[in-house]
Length: 82
Image (cartoon, rainbow, N blue to C red; front, side, top):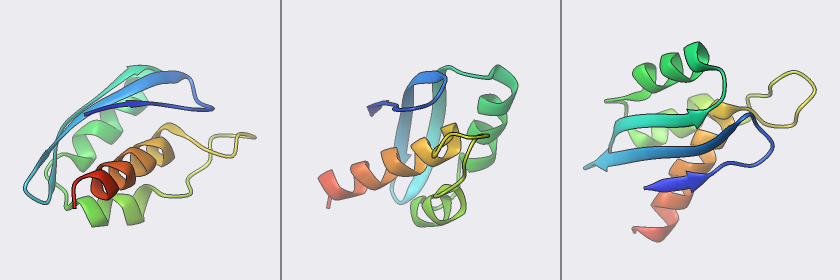
């Protein structure tokens, strides 16, 4: 799935869901080291656990972050695929 981000440096998040687990995650743009780290940490994680852990994380003065945007993307996926 492709998710267009809002309010962060990355422009898009591409990810796969395998059953109830987060598959491959790739951020387009953003802070390369941070987005690679987030991607590797959530791959293989249960979707609901990833949402719970990432939701609400802020980046500096911004009301969101790349991890928070990933939680929004995962929520949108769940809403559209139930």
